[in-house]
Amino acid sequence: MYIYIDQNKWIDFGRALLGRPEGKKFTDVANKIVKKTESDEWILPISIVHLMETLDNSDPDRKKRFSEILIKHSKVNDVFLSKN
Image 1 (cartoon, rainbow, N blue to C red):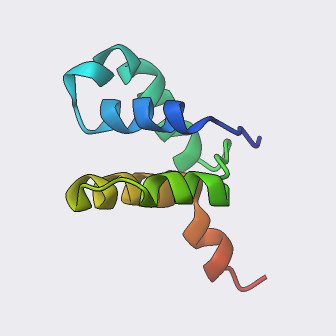
Image 2: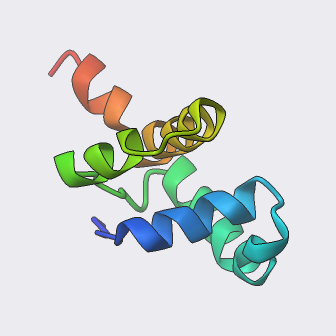
């Protein structure tokens, strides 16, 4: 199943995964998302807009952490590195 989520929800997801206080209320859904994406039941596509908004962040550490979450859970590497 493909699930398109807004950048703000990606941010909430990332905060929950990173254990940030403001992400605490999203922990249960974040755990479910991880389970579903790791089992390939769910795919969370990202767009160029997601990437542009991420690159707009002026904090390099935050940008790197968030980019890693986007790449891992959107499975963008799987798509580009696929032999199909």
